[in-house]
Image (cartoon, rainbow, N blue to C red; front, top):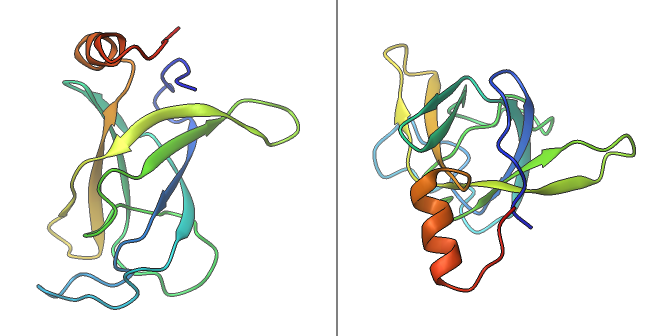
Length: 129
């Protein structure tokens, strides 16, 4: 279910099968393993929801998660219920790039609530709020 877009600073959860260590070009460690992480939306820009997270997974906490090669198409969920059930999908992984420090990754997710996304989903027969 597509739900209303998150606000800047709101908690989101992301899932993907991508690399968990990609500062080095071509790094493929960890690909093919489903991982879930959490973060906060830091920006909403031109039809994207942006998170900025760590480029490596040094622990299993899943905090400060970011998109990586292999995560494209993975969902971004939002949790708006008091019992920690996911309310629905708000975005889809699109790409990522390293910030200048090379320890943070800027990860845009396509905002499923943008006018363009909503029109596309409706044209496919998918009900959106």
